[in-house]
Length: 282
Image (cartoon, rainbow, N blue to C red; front, side, top):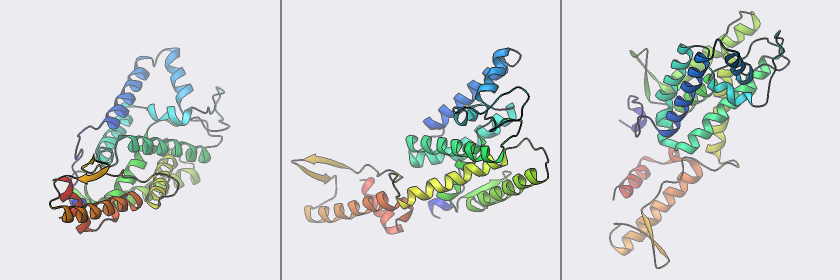
């Protein structure tokens, strides 16, 4: 069974990698502050200033969109359940992504999705009286990334029914589209920002596609560290064997690493992955 086909187990390398831990702690801290100050004027100010208010908002208090809100709205939540399920999904789907991409790349992706979701949501809520809060746009971007990076990984729906990640993600996107379309056309008054969810997925898809195609942005995953050292101006790979054979294998590893840099890890053949794993373990 290949790596991508194995049942999903969160936190393949670190159960709680640094970016996931920091994002969760920040969201919990802000929520506790909201709860502690909810009956004070300062508590109302947090929501008024930090929530994502629609452009030309029709609210009676004169509250409006501000430039910092596409970032701050991601740290505000309307209830404990809202916070819990967002952070749980972030850990479940984001831990392995961060382990796979690295902390810096995961942080960048998370905030690109969250901010992108905010601006797409603004396009669909012009003149509405209610603000948007929550990290759901960024979380849906993380969900989309998991489905793209590990499409054949099985996820257990309701902890009972196995379904491949690519179908799980596609199903969620379809449901969100129908829900968002229904809430806008039928005036259902739903308090769920469906188009923010779709926006996070759309931005995530565009972002990952750009990275895979190598357009203007540096490639990921980052080029793995090979076992090299400088000796007399020459780069050598440890424990390769005889000199002639060593040079040949080193050239093969260099070619594989260059392929990862230009096309991504997923482009490697099974034989190339085996050679890379064998070289890294020596």
